[in-house]
Length: 531
Image (cartoon, rainbow, N blue to C red; front, side):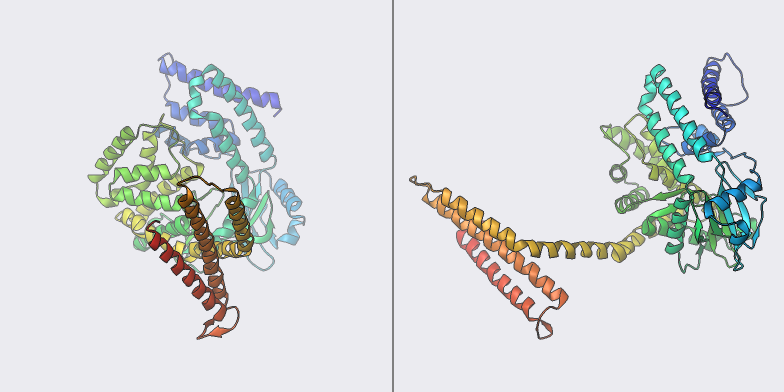
């Protein structure tokens, strides 16, 4: 569609929705559809870009009411598959070889299609069954074009309705646009798959189908084929409890060990294989949690389960959700009300995701700005809890989450964090030892120079001059002592030089000299009576 025609179509649809919304609010127009349903249908009618836009907005529990979120979550990619000949052309252009050289069998008829891509079955020459994900031709260009038009329309809307600026609509568009670009780049998805394959290597409860090496590009992704029965199939009633526990453990491992998690665990992306393992599909939406966020998330979980509103608020602040100035007392009152609501429910019915969403809504208009990774986390938690209750309605989710989160976080820190920290310490200590002689020389020269210039001959100040000289000497001796401790520690760690009683002799001499200097410093300070 030409640029002008597409711009006209988008403008007419969005301004038409606003006009419809105004008329129905004034009771000048009757409709069977709710405003949320009308928005969903409007976005769906505008095609792939706006379907994805609606799906992105469905994460915004901090901005939209519950009925809008529910309607937007129902958005479906109602797109017919494109011809198999086009798919073959895309595959051959991206991978640089004819399809018959790449695969022994290739089904040109897609078995699944969406607004971004469609999927074909194939078989490798070594017998492996695979799926081939092919990006829809021209979709990347269409998304960029549509988002530029939407941005221009929103800017015009802000001129007419400046009050909307508090919701930062342009920033939301930018964020969704950025994530759409990632979703249309299958190299990113392949990297995500690789991270999860490595993270669950050897797992007896989780399986991640690997991407086929060297057979993925920006527009084509070849992945091992795997499947089974859907996770909420009625046939799993007896196996439900252990599956629910394995599923929660898998997500705790993602949250607190991998620092990356599958962001869309709805039943269509989860299968139970014949050997009982849970198989994850579709890694287009993946969230990431850095070390600080993991610690703060674990703290928030514990504060929630212990019904400590002050701790919950502090954890919320540490997660980077609240910005600028806000009414702390009013916010904490809202948390107290939330805790009181949950206190009347059995623990198994508590929902961490729902609580997080309710807290987000407390902050509407109070400098709330939820980072994208936490929006994805809220979606993943909500879907995860639904899946767990589908597998085992009696599962104590809070005990499973909070009881293991802290232990898993500490174990992860012991395995990775300590090694990382000591590696940095060794590096920084090495640099300090190399730079210490020059630094000490410069310091002593400066002290001598300043001491020579600082000649005061005034009655009553002779004691001050002596005190300054003694302080300078102690500072220099303290620095030399510190250098000796560091050098001796490095010599001890690396076992350098001759040994005495099984320990490096040079290190022992360094420690002995450092201890002697320490003794001199302590004795001098003690005699002076001053620290």
